Image 1 (cartoon, rainbow, N blue to C red):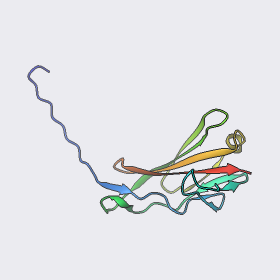
Image 2: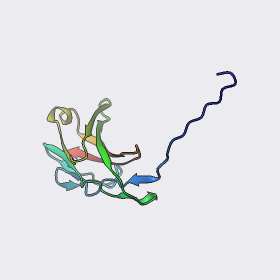
Image 3: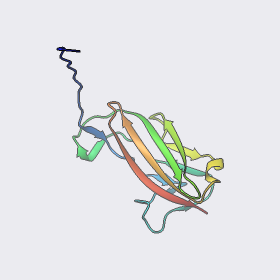
Image 4: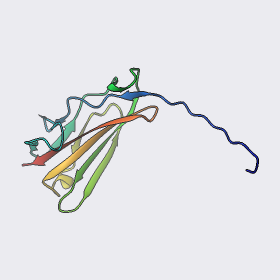
Length: 132
């Protein structure tokens, strides 16, 4: 590349998808954060559900049309050792039943729902729950 000049460009988009709203854990409202007292206590089967994301983030970036291409749900347990479950879901799927074989391995879980937009921009929410 001696003496050659490289040039490239990419288009940046400042429209971020809104975070998921009305998140429920087995029919109970999700905690605002993992520091909330008390955390939701749920029984099996554990189903995490949320409203479809159809608009841009109300506070971050610019307003504009979005196209959700997928959701990612990550469920984690910290004790007795870290364990994680990650699922990619198409944009029309806004709920997921956590396999009983996974929840049988712990008592307290953290989850994150990521919203991925067509341009690659994403937002996420995080919450926690405990099992009965």
